[in-house]
Length: 223
Image (cartoon, rainbow, N blue to C red; front, side, top):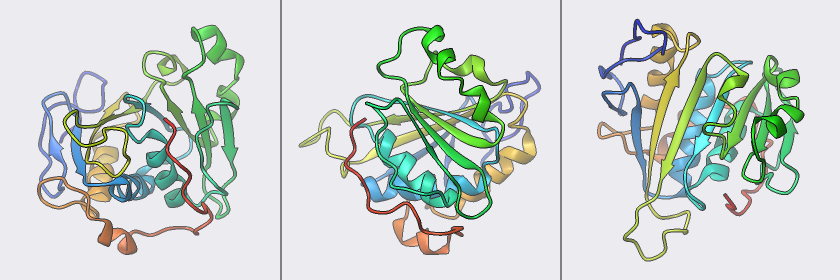
C-alpha cells in the first residue's frame, strides 16, 4: 500500500511484505479464525500507534469490537481489565509503561455530535490512543486523521455472535497522520502476526513486543 496524494494517507494496494490483503480503497484486509486472532491483530497494531491516534470501530453486535480493544490494550501496556464501556460510555486506561493511555468509548447509546462533544474527548486525544466503538460517522470530526477498523462476522455459521467464529477485519487509514511511512509501519506490525493470505496467527503473538501484561482476564464480548 502506498500513500495517496489526496490527503487520505492511503490509496490503492501495494502490500508487499505484509500478509494483509490490499484493497483498492487503501484498506488492509485481514482474517481471524477466532477471538484470539482478533486480539493478536490488535496487539500487533499497537506498535504502530502513537498518542493522538483515533480509531473508529465499526461492525454489528458481537463482531468483536471489545475483543479487538482488549488486544490493543495489552499491546499498549495499559491498566485493565478492558471491558465494554456500554453503560459508562467512556473508560480511561492509564499506561503502565510510559506510553499513551487508552481511552475506550462506546458511542452506541449516544445521539448526535452534541452528545459526543459533551464527553470532551479532545481533552485526552493528544495524549492517548482513543478507540470509539460504534463511532462511524459520529466522531470523525474530532481529529484530522482516523484509522477505521471494520469487523465483519460471517452470516452462515452455527452462531454468528460467537466470538470464536471467523472474522474479517478491514483497516482503512485516513488523513495526513497516515502518510507512507506510517502505513509502512502499520503493514510491518501486521505482517509479524499474519500469514501470506492475511490470516492471523495467534502463535506469533509471543514475538510481538508488549510493554507489560496488565490487561487482565478477557471480558465477555458485549459489542
